[in-house]
Length: 352
Image (cartoon, rainbow, N blue to C red; front, top):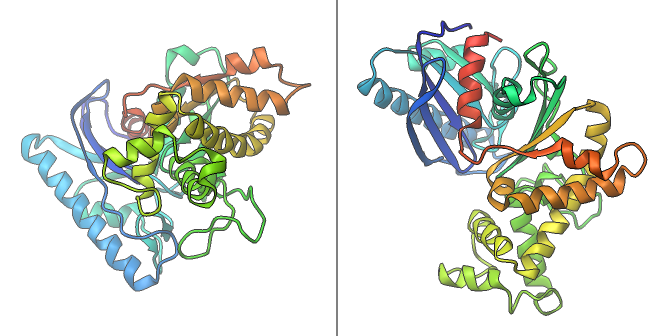
């Protein structure tokens, strides 16, 4: 649905960790808010639980819209960026990491009915790719590959000339977090067991936390965890590696990497190695002129993350992509938490 540029759009970026909202007026954002996302289960929980959790999420969405319209009653459209499969019609897949495996998919029309307003729903990385695809910085490029490394991991390819994300009708392409990188019997799995050895379990912010926890608990002396800065940072938060939440470990890991902790940087190198094992093939098939990194984990670490990824990609592209060229291709996105909010606002205006 296309929205006139003069209208006010409530943009909602639903993340695994945080939900961000802001008002888009066709040119800029205002009224920015950030709150924790209600997330009780991993992918694959029983249908009854997932249905209930999805209802709770919808109720929270209604509250967000009511709050925003209480201060700005002229808001007459809602644009939602969602972390999971969203098809070309704005229907959210039945199985998501927010509420588990529901018995049916969630169409945009149902969300619209609950909110009482027209709704645009797109995948979060498709929204982020739209922000950068419309950026004049990349006006001379043909294709932009957006790679998000946050609590989850994924990618989307943007056709700058045609001003659209290249996406199959189900919205499946770019879901690199589901690519299997560890086929061994001991591979990491989700609580449900439905995902085993997938990239997201090793290379996302949560995946890197899993790696850190496994390495620290399994072989703390050999890996140097016992004397690491990461251990100190967790202790300052009254946490121990064995029982800490992955989100807390991930936050401490980012800080420890930035402070030069050898154990944490070794974990990061391992996570990036897994990412490069998938991404080098994606780069070959996408023919992207530029690869933009976004997501809280990658951007929290900053230039070191980009540099390490370039090195790992260069190891795999010794013939076709020289290191100097990869150094120009791989860029860091803006560390402002606004990618999906701006992108979904623009998507609501483009009408696709």
